[in-house]
Length: 138
Image (cartoon, rainbow, N blue to C red):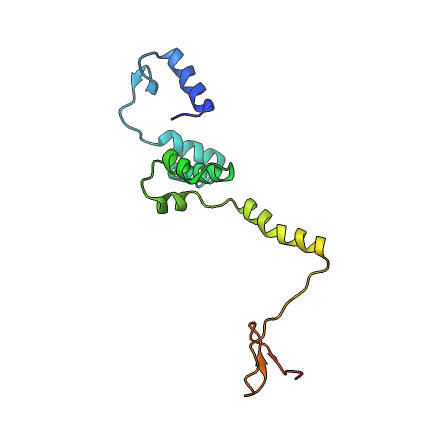
């Protein structure tokens, strides 16, 4: 399956060489040596592998709101666990989600720290869930 950008590139190449899509000097490419990829990486000083592009594709599908099942199909996975690995959340989306808490708190008022305490057993000071010791006022 090709998106519209990839399809336009393939169609352009097909117009030049109608029999094969991927050719070199007018002949079919039978194997990939990756030399062009390596030169391109060196030129832009990126330490990225072709395989890394699959991770990028999976993350971008997730960021675009593509369903899990469709991501799994587009990535060619039979295991949902592998799809999850390839479609991790974009950092910017996680940061936006974390900042939503701040936005909600601003609507309500100033930030408040709520300490949860265990009930006093009568054996000494109470301990909070944060491990700090408070003496009960009771």
